[in-house]
Amino acid sequence: MHNPLTQADQTPFDVLTEAGKVIAMRAWATRLAGGTVVLYDEQQNNIAEMRMGSPAFEPVQKGELRAHPIAPEEGANADAVPIMGAVMTPEGTPIFRLPVHTSPGKLGIALSQSSVELGGQVRLDALVVRW
Image 1: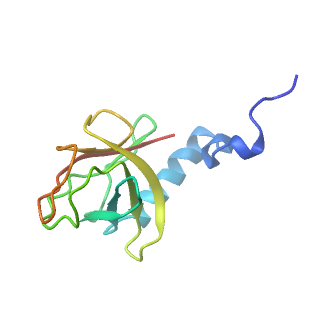
Image 2 (image 1 turned 30 degrees about the vertical axis):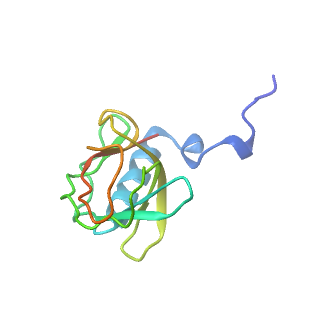
């Protein structure tokens, strides 16, 4: 029978065992310690940046990687609605691109507000990655 999921449609996680997925997530968590979460609007303008701690993430549980709390950051770069975020290493290499929303239980980046104001505070409520 033909598999409708082609190689091009697969993510790196699709070819790993469960143990392999946990190892990969732990490696990413280590690599992201002290990294940055950058928020972007629809035009892909950088509207805010938040520094992650070290360690950046809690231990992997039930296929999820959850960031430790990130302190609110002052000084948003624009009045905008963030729609996407990039989680980057301390050197600026993007590792994850995630949707932005206001629901802490969902996959992605949850903010306490749906929009940010120029110079205003940005508070990240949750950052969740799942395989």
